[in-house]
Image 1 (cartoon, helix red, strand yellow):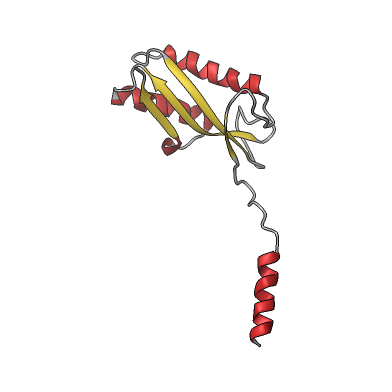
Image 2 (cartoon, rainbow, N blue to C red):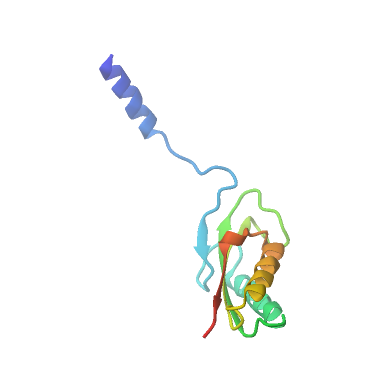
Length: 125
């Protein structure tokens, strides 16, 4: 009986594990990234977001890094080929003002459907 249970346990452990549908595989957006959006498109998204935010009152200069992941059921304007924005890091001159931080977070949430806890806004030196 014990040998039979041990055999079943080993058989279950040997089964391959697959990712759940809709689960994302994160990766930092860099020029050498190999996801379905090429590096030029990703840096273009970062540039567009930087341009938009730098024109908002109180923000000042900004730098943006987008994190992306693959998702099968991706929906949204910037989700090309199953790639979605999964996190955003922003350094802004106005990053010490809570109103500015809230405005930045709301803009990013609206553009990329990213939850607030996946957006980090820091004070640029």
